[in-house]
Each structure stands twice: as C-alpha cells, then as structure tokens.
Length: 220
Image (cartoon, rainbow, N blue to C red; front, side, top):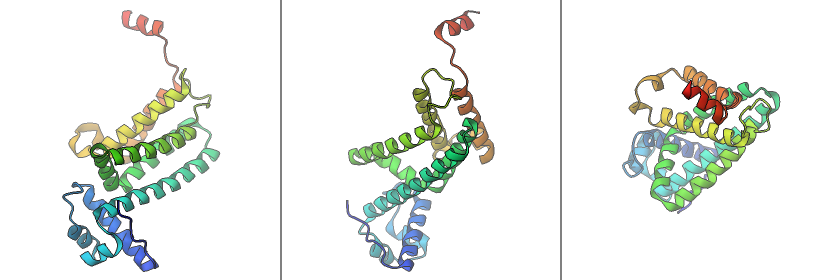
C-alpha cells in the first residue's frame, strides 16, 4: 500500500481534511471502486492535481481515512476514561457509551462502510480490522468494567462482550443500513439512544434465571 504524502503547512492540512471529508460523504453512499478521484476532488472544491499532491492513489486515501478514524478513536478512548472516573453509575456509563458510539458512526459513516466492505474482500484488511476491533473491545470492556457490582449477570465479562456486540451491531445497522430497515430504526436519534441504553442496562443489571427457573416458566 502506498503511503499518504504528509502535509507540510497548515493550509495543506486543511486541504487534506477537506478531501477526506468529501471522500467520507461520497463513500457513505457508493463503493470505493465507483467513487472517482475527480468526483472526490470536485466535492471538496479542488482539482485532481490537489488530490494527487496529497495521495499517491486511491489506496493511499483509504489508509488516510483509516488513520483519521484511529485518531478519533484515541480521542474517544480518552473521553471515556475521563467519564468513567466521574460517572461510576452503570446506567449513566452505558448511556454515554451508546450516545458516543452513535456519534462516532455518524461522523465516520463513509470510512466505516468502506472499511467494512474491504475487510470482507481482503485478507489483509480483515486482519487490520480484527486488530482494531480488538483494541476497541478491550477499551470499552474496561470502561463498562465487568467487576462492577451493578452487573448482575453470572458471567460479567461474557455479558459485557455480548452487550458490546449488541450495541455495535444495532448502531451499525442503524447508521449504515438504516435506509433499508423499516419501522423503529427511523426513530429520532435521542429516542433511539434511550432505547438501546435501556436494553443494555436491563441485560447487564438483571440477574439471569438459571435453567430450572427458565424451564418452570416455559412449563407453567
């Protein structure tokens, strides 16, 4: 993969950000192969020459989008760490995580849609995605903290894992594929955040019935 040509001046950095923003907008609605350099440059208000002054090719653009997403995640992780220190209540931590996750998907919709498609088509990108997702999982698991006494599940670490999977599966469907899903997914964003937060809090804070109790419920 060919690298990004790093900007040398603040003006060049601004141009880079505008090109990445334009690519995000376009890639949110179409595939990487269908998005042309000319289209991306025009959306940003620049010439094709401005694009190639910063990227050797479209693959370098992809790497830059991934790098920017990683930088944003670093900021997110720092925010969550600070929040956890002042918000010990599990319900509050869950809602902040859900709200922040929705914002991250909204802000990076094009890049995430592209990286997801690439991961299904390329073993190299699949490996990169697995590493990134592992970092996200470890950080967010520590944020929810399986040791929290408010988590009533008999296997707290497993429950946190499942909660994170439910969260990101739902948010991904809502933000990336919502146009194809009828009904509740069209809810206003704050209401959707409330609903997801409620489901996750109930799941983590409610004791799980054992097999005997579940059988009696079914039989009775």
